[in-house]
Amino acid sequence: MRCYFEGKVKTSADSISVDFIEIVKCSNGKTIVLDWDESEIGFDDIPDEDGYRPFSGRLIGIKFDEEYANGKISEIIGAELSAAQFFIEDEIAENPVFTELQLDDDGVLCDFNLSNADVEYTIINA
Image: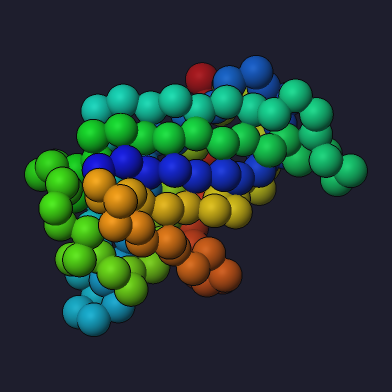
């Protein structure tokens, strides 16, 4: 399973990484932490008019609560993003947000509704 995403953050840093992603199943309220084996992420060169730097990337070898998630996408259909943490080497970075987040399980897709105002986005830095 893979995860594809796009987002934006106010920063002057040259690199960014996703530390963790947490989702909540709507049907039973169970929290699932996504983990992965490998990541590719980078910034677009030009910030937007509000100073946000767009970024995009993919996560490979997705796990749900430390168990490989291949073939298990049906378990999270309808789940919502609840939290995401980013690592950015910039003490004044602010307001990270995913604008698109999709899981791909061998062609079976799960797009997350990111309009949830209750998503907790955090930044850790060096």
